[in-house]
Image 1 (cartoon, rainbow, N blue to C red):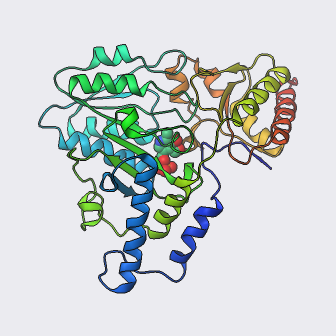
Image 2 (image 1 turned 30 degrees about the horizontal axis):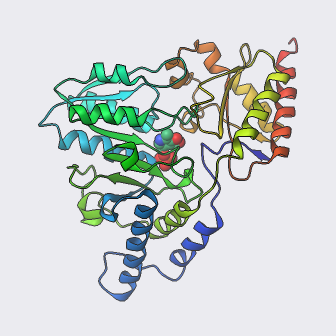
Amino acid sequence: MVYLDYNATTPLCLEAKEAMLPFLDGIYGNPSSIHSEGRRARAEVDEARDRVAAVMGVRPHEIIFTGGGTESCNLGIIGLARAHAPKGRHIITSSIEHHAVLHAFEYLKHFEGFEVEILPVERNGIVSPDRLAAMIHPDTTLVSVMHANNETGAIQPLRELSEICRDHGVLLHTDAVQTFGKIPMKPADLGVSALSISSHKFYGPKGVGALFLAAGVALSRTVHGGAQENTRRPGTENVAGIAGMAAAAEMTFSQAPLLPLREQLWDGILDACPTALRNGDAEHSLANTLNVSFPGMDGEALLIGLDLEGVCASSGSACMVGSIRPSHVLLAMGLPPATAMATVRFSLGRETTANDISHAISAVHNVAANQLLPA
Ligand code: PLP
């Protein structure tokens, strides 16, 4: 089996697994308990916070552990929008965000009366800083733009966006779920006030993530209960998950070897299927991500065909599996719906080899040839 769906999830690395095992077995205390068992668990959570903070170059109390990327984005966006609502109720996000962000904005619009504005992207899937500057007005309090897109890999000009936000006194949250562990991303360098990550995208366990929140920035809680995470995210901590995430966060892995493999894959696909179109800006994108449309073909059938050939790829966002709607990201980039529907995302990772790429190219060749046969 050739796995080319690393943007959907990654396998658990050995380091993360080993860090988790003691907390799945012998050490089971509740970090909030004052006895010795509880204190052992508390020590692990505290140490993990220090380690994640060190990797990001932030202070430990600026890290809030959450139950994954979706929760982290919701807490950052809803928590910031509510806390700063007395100053203004105009909030902005981009058209290519993951549903973890888009649906949080829709919730704020429909149920809490916020005025939501959507920043469009250019044909290459990248937002324009000038357009953001034109959208901000005195009532704007929050902007959320992702660091890199999960479907196309397009890297957004966050540094420029954050300068605009800073000049206007507006908070900037970024969904860095696809970049943490792939490209350098220190919140201070990006200039963001809040940033979301998810452990299972960087070889850690599923169901655990974190929100970086700059010291001194007010946040309303979105879940009510105990005093965990400094009352900002109540609920007993996922100690094993947090331990695994911290270990995975410390693993460094160069993306450089993925670039030639990705280009080899694209060249091979183009040979096998000369009508194929590459979506996004190859230069400003994650080295591991290739998004290809096969005009005139059926995207679902392509994916099933690839699976039968032993290749795991994706139609875009994994959260859209089972849905036959074209990707909102590709539509926002101006692709016609039929072309968007005929699209496959290949995402490479730590274990991808040149042999995997050759296998994937012949699989695309076979599947495309089958689709082009007259019925
Ligand atoms: N944001 C982006 C860009 C993603 O790719 C994903 C997952 O696909 C998420 C958020 C949601 O993360 P999680 O699966 O941890 O909830």
